[in-house]
Every structure is written in C-alpha cells, then in structure tokens.
Image 1: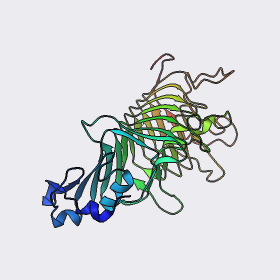
Image 2: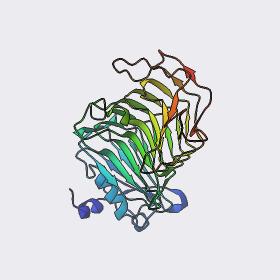
Image 3: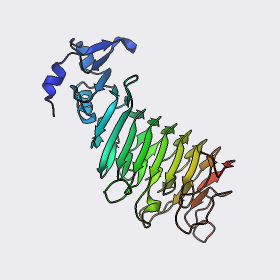
Image 4: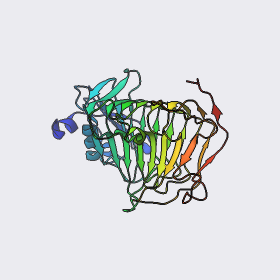
Length: 332
C-alpha cells in the first residue's frame, strides 16, 4: 500500500466544475497543487492505473474520502487487474460515486482468478453509485453486491450499472462455495441496470445450478429497472426476486440458453416469506432454457415463474405480471 501522504502530496490538475468549486484530478503525471477548495469537498477525479500512484479501487476510495469528495469519479485505465475484491464504504450524503473505464485507454478487465466473493461490495450510504464500461470475470459469488439491509433500515438508492460485461462467474469457473449474482441487490431501490452483457454465469453442481443469477433483487429491493441487457449461459434464472421485492421492471432484454425455473422468477424463503407485488416482464426476446441432461422444458408462453405457482399457498396477486414478449429459439 502506498503512503497516503505521498499520494496527496502529488499535485492535482484542476478541471472547471459547476459553481466554481472545480474538480481535482489525481493520477499519473499530475504535478500541480490543487486549490484548498478541492481538498474540502466538491468534485474529485481519481485515475487508477497499473503501477500508477493510485493502482487499485481501494486506494482510489481512500483518496476520495481524504479529500471529502461529494462527487467522485474513478477512471480506470485499460489493462487487467487481478485478484482484487473491494468493500466500498465511502458514500457522501447527496453525492455520487462513479467507477468507469477511462475512454481511449483500452479494455478494462477485473479478473478474480478464481477467488471467492464479489468483485465490489457497495455498502449503504447517502451517495448514488454508478459503474460502467468494465469487464468482471472469474469470481465465485458474483460481480457487484449492493449491500443494503432492510431490517436495519439501510437502503441504497439511485445508482446504475451500464455497459458492463459479467462473465465466467460461479463455481464452474472458480473455487468458492457458491455463485449468487452478477449484480446482487439487497434493499436497493430505483437502480438502473442497462445495456450489460451477462455471459457464462454457472455453478458447478446440479444442486447449485439454479442459485446463480444475472440480476438478483433480494431483501426487499424494489422499483429497479433492468433493460437492454443480454443474458446467455446462465444456469439459474437470469433475473430473480425475493424477500418482498416489488415493482421491478424487466424490459427489452435478450435471453438465450439461460434460466432454470424461468427468465424472471420470484421465490419466498423462510427468512422473509413476503409476497412481492407489481413486478413486470415485457418487451423481451427469449429462447431456450439453460441446457441440462434429460431436460425437455421450454419457456415458450411462460417465461416467468414463482414459488408454488398454480398451487395452494402461492402469492396472490401474482408477484410478476407479464406483458408481450417474443419467443425466438435461435435468437442471439
């Protein structure tokens, strides 16, 4: 770990911002001193680069916290970052945190190299957190965990995940206990999951095939939108909801070779047997379910499912409403 004093001592280039506060940009080659206002809040841009003064997301978070950034942007330079897993806690009230690929520097890949856990765990706070333009692969549990807590009254609100690639997640590609979700949301509200690619999200054993998902709404996560994404080779249901998750919309996505019980499913568990309401699935194109030996099931005409569907004890009203969708077995 680099000494924080050395890092802050390196100069920050000032970029004009709204209200005259400016945005301080830290990164390789920055050799001018930032004005006092940039160290007391406002907008701060941090550049992450392999071998640079800021070489990891953990270091970038510390820079933003030390500078009391209200709006923080982390620009990640092209390259492969190996075996990194981050618990992101900095979340200033009313602010925003954006972690994205730096334009024009090449593809950004975070490769877990088979490690257990998630790439990033975002703790509840007062800021909106956004991710874009990054590939995440070879983690067991999943990609991004938004870790709110319904019982504790800790809610995550208003972030986004856009233009990301999540691939090779789960126990088929790593050695941890179990894969859960590429984007896993606990008590997270009004999030937008848009234009991402979810590929090869698979658990290794028949007992755990169904437990990994592309997007998982849990612990009451509600009023989120999943749109314009592609899902392929997901051994569990690509979108899953539970624990009272309600009014989530799944619109205009493409699904192929994916799904165990359905493409969007709702399950009740003993930990929180609440029925969600008002979830919606429409405008999607879908094909074959995830292949497994002896399976003959097709989702044609029935792309969603929920616990005890059609049986005594099922949720009433139905937790997922279905609009018009297109069945295309060979679609990609």
